[in-house]
Image 1 (cartoon, rainbow, N blue to C red):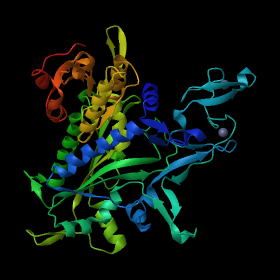
Image 2 (image 1 turned 45 degrees about the vertical axis):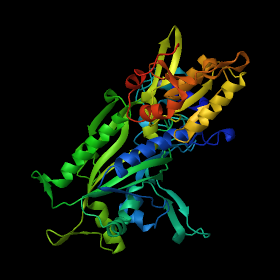
Image 3 (image 1 turned 30 degrees about the vertical axis):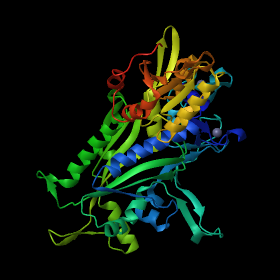
Image 4 (image 1 turned 60 degrees about the vertical axis):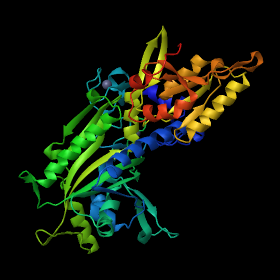
Length: 490
Ligand SMILES: [Zn+2]
Ligand SMILES: [Zn+2]
């Protein structure tokens, strides 16, 4: 993980928030390449789950909502973690996690010497187990109290109880409260889904592991509504749709290059299920911190719509024309994190390779996700014709793809730098391209394209570049395209 954190900072993907002030707890800023990568992930998700499907629409609800929403959803009463405080140093811990950290101990068997004892183990010298604060080793811990994880704030100028509101802890509720608006305005028929990408906030007591768990994060959520009276091949439609979504979401990560062996499905145990959930499955990724949740796919039944109908007094039903009755749809919720997805795509793309005795770091991003698609590099920057041609090429290609120009190092170095940020293709302009006017030699108007993963190079006419990249950055494979052109010297 440290390798990724350091690469992210060095190459402009992710910076610590407010770093010049010493940083804030577990908040991160996406730099120039990070914002491109994150946008690409969100764009791919939106295209595949909304634009390419006939049964999905999008939504962008506000972060601040009516406080009653959180009463109805259960967040106000149940979205809590048990907390204990140290009476001496005031440090706060999650009651259920306090045994999972090492503890400071002043051992009576060694005249009060200070030791750090590993998590869950007794002291080697006196065999005593931890009963005091793990951080200072001196204070008693309070009995556990429930701590709500929602960020509280005030709407308007008056800081009084009536003005209390919350930053949403999930985007899902914005979809549920708009169920009827979307249904009526878009004249939808079940089954259909509403998708949303947006920020959510949770005042986690123990955030950490880089962008894996943060207090401010971005969700990519789908609420897919199903008629509970319907069956598919004799089975309840909600169960069948649940399986379809698990499959579809599991395949999605692989479509963008995530390796199958780093993904797995984990079924929630009965005692782990939320009280309203019929079944929940996690798609897990093998992060550098171990297997952890990448996305949850839950069958939330009709719980949310019923709760909001009850608390708002508005009917949130669907009229089943065939059966001539009102039904409350069941909902399947594939809920993914944009930041977590980014971390997983980044970890999966990262490779260290040995090339001719030298170490090469490469991010093997899928071309759709790569922050930069093409880098145009001049072989010699003291030849004005080369530089001008390279600038012109960048300008032309940039209309269609994210393309950068770089002349700040020798060519070998420039290639390595692009490998390290996952740029799939480099285009090099050299002497042959432009010729030598002093000697009366005209150039061949050809350039070299280098592919990131194979490091193979081909020589192609400038005029054909847009067509070639249309294929390479579309569905075309490098090997198929490269076959039609002569190889270039590496
Ligand atoms: Zn303490
Ligand atoms: Zn001891």
